[in-house]
Length: 178
Image (cartoon, rainbow, N blue to C red; front, side, top):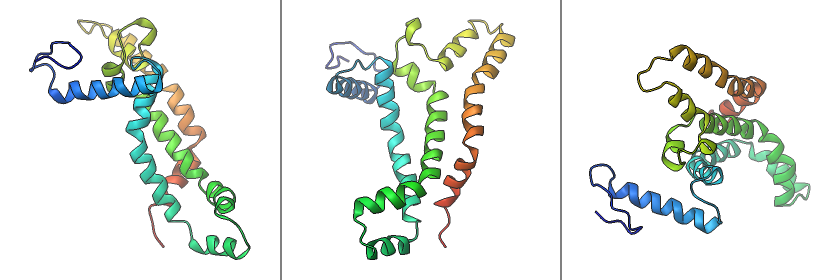
């Protein structure tokens, strides 16, 4: 079939939904003035894909904060802005750390979005895609792939270990009501 962008697509290789998603993605990139097939474009895609979960986690965390603190601040004459800046934000640091860790790990390990939205140029290949390409056509370099995979795990491990206490607090805080 002939898509709006003038490219002829096979109905077996790409569905109409894939073509539509690609067009919407390119239009969003044009709206922000960036190329959709760039690192900035993929950051926008990850932001769009990650926002619903992050909003859900933050909403549940903030909703679990005791309302008595907000009422006490109101009695003391605090405005909405002061309550947000002096009570909600400091108490939400574990939730923000959990969200940051989850988003970082999701983006770091993501191969699918990079394959779909980035070109195969050497300057635009992400680490997970490069690891997949190291395997080769006949899958003979397993020792190189294994070593590279372990080296690529160092950064996420350091991030997680350095923020582990916030991660545990942030995940548990919004889960129980009581």
